[in-house]
Amino acid sequence: MSYSTTLIGRTIGKYEILAVVGGGGMGTVYRARQVGMGREVAVKVLNVELSESDQFVRRFQREAEALAALEHPHIIPVIDFGQESDFLYLVMALKTGGNLSHVIREGNVPLEDVGRYIEQIASALDYAHLRGIIHRDLKPANILLDEDRNTFLTDFGIARRLGETKLTAQGTVVGSPTYMAPESWRGEDPSAETDVYSLGIILYQLLTGRAPFEETKTARLMNMHLFEAPPSVRTARPELDERFDAILSLALAKDRAQRFHSAGEMAKAVRAALKNRPIAPAAAPPPAESDKTLILQRTQPTPPPDRDARLRPPTPPQAPPPAASPPPPAAPTPLLAEDEPEPAKPRLDNTRLLIIGMGAVIILLLVLIVILLLSR
Ligand SMILES: Nc1ncnc2c1ncn2[C@@H]1O[C@H](COP(=O)(O)OP(=O)(O)O)[C@@H](O)[C@H]1O
Ligand SMILES: [Mg+2]
Image 1: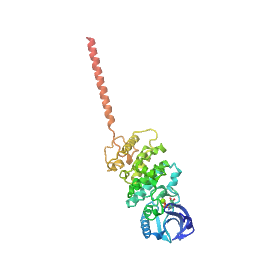
Image 2: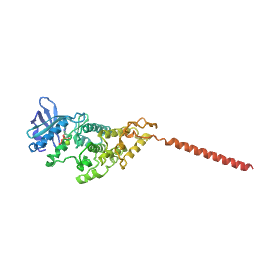
Image 3: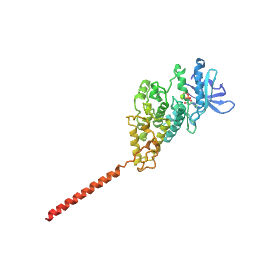
Image 4: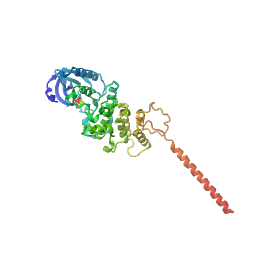
């Protein structure tokens, strides 16, 4: 970012550069004023020598157009893009609440906020995935916040695709190892599940303040992502429900076929776990217990043939009509929806009654025999 501050005071296109607001491997992001409109925007100026590649510029334009077409409440709107002398730039809405890595650094993120962040990010991911766009570099620094702590995804697609061309040659790290899914380490094409994995790492960080796999040596870190199970979140935050570990084991499954189908599905599971958490903090009433057991069963390492079977809410929603067990009012979550009624108890009581009854009859008969013998 050698030139980062040198642009301050200059006007690029219709944008008067005011200050640096951030920067990453791809470029520097500035707060700028849109001339004639009076509004402030964010202008990201890419670190690249334009003259080096026409192909690069065309690719950038395609990407920028694709991003500009994304309209979602939790995706940063792209307002404009262009090229000025040696610079390629992208103009976005300016968000002034920092990014999610600041939130994680502060620590002790309230659980309600964790749920809200995950839901918002997941809705943005689902929206993009449906349109065939994979983020590819999902991480807290690419999730911006406004003053009300709403989240906005940024850096969509661009980082990876541009990185594939020129920027890798300049030594830019493509992808962020802490968040990289096993398939990315193996160099396979990313899919929606690749973003789900990164979202799993972010969830882990929001809950514990730490990433599940922390290691400075890249080879060792790669090994952890490829082969090691994440440590329980309850080690760092013992008060957390076991269900968070179950959710994370699905989000961070090594085999992407075993992961959540979509980010939204994962967010639903998080919401379910959060919803139930405050209901039974001390006493352990039957609904909470059966919830836990069911989820633990689903997350046993023996992988079921189809990932649907692991966590998906019942395929025909509320299909099993025999939900006639004592239904607790507070268990309407997808994770728990497959609970089965347990008709075993009444049968046990009857058997016990029968045995007691027969015992009594035998004792009576014995007493009668003794009386008869004595009376002779
Ligand atoms: N629209 C924006 N409004 C405010 N800050 C932003 C905006 N876009 C990016 N930033 C800040 O700049 C940082 C880097 O932006 P990003 O687009 O991720 O660049 P890079 O591709 O270099 O990683 C972000 O983490 C954030 O702090
Ligand atoms: Mg970034």
